[in-house]
Length: 253
Ligand code: PXP
View 1 (cartoon, rainbow, N blue to C red):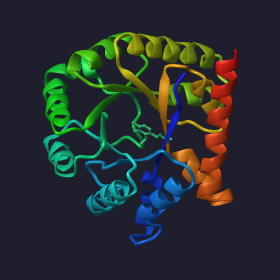
View 2: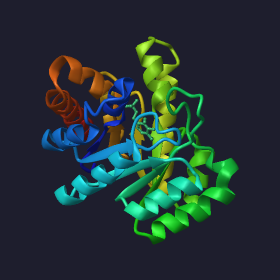
View 3: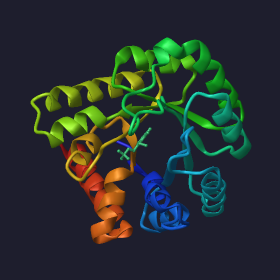
């Protein structure tokens, strides 16, 4: 079972900054702190409506991650505007996500099955620029097959439904986790690298980190919330420790 990487999503530092239209708190400073605390990489979503991360943030994040030799994972909608930005920065990775302006957060996975004709050429152009492309999808076998057909190197499974079920103590949680596990097995069988993210907290990180095929988690909102109480560095270190413990326990089982 390989090392499990932690990508820290700093979008919601920018959400707080933008609530006041001020220059602080600075998501770039948060990215520096996250890397210093043991994050393997930084994830940021430049939304079409720029509600949190701005173009200038992406410029600065690309700069500091390059200087530190750490990966930047740019979450982006499947649009010509975002493609041009990705190609201008050539981040280590780009994660294709669905985007609807009225949503509060990314509510479900990208429909790669339905959008294959548009998505496959985009994946090809980004990959040709040296960007590792991931599709953020629901844990659904048809979507996994479509991501493979689109030429993606990576799939990131949307864990939001599972995490929400756990938080609400819903009996659906076990079934939703099994879906993620089955989709992860299928993705690995097809030669795709497997990531997971959305809604993960200290509780849900454990079963997700124990899935042997998963090699990267992208976690944001919970960590930024915890940072209010214990600081960003300690929140990341605690998450990191829980990931490592769950991985070690799964290895020993
Ligand atoms: N992965 C992807 C593709 C996302 O869109 C998000 C949310 O921006 C995350 C991970 C992180 O989710 P959360 O902020 O709920 O931890």
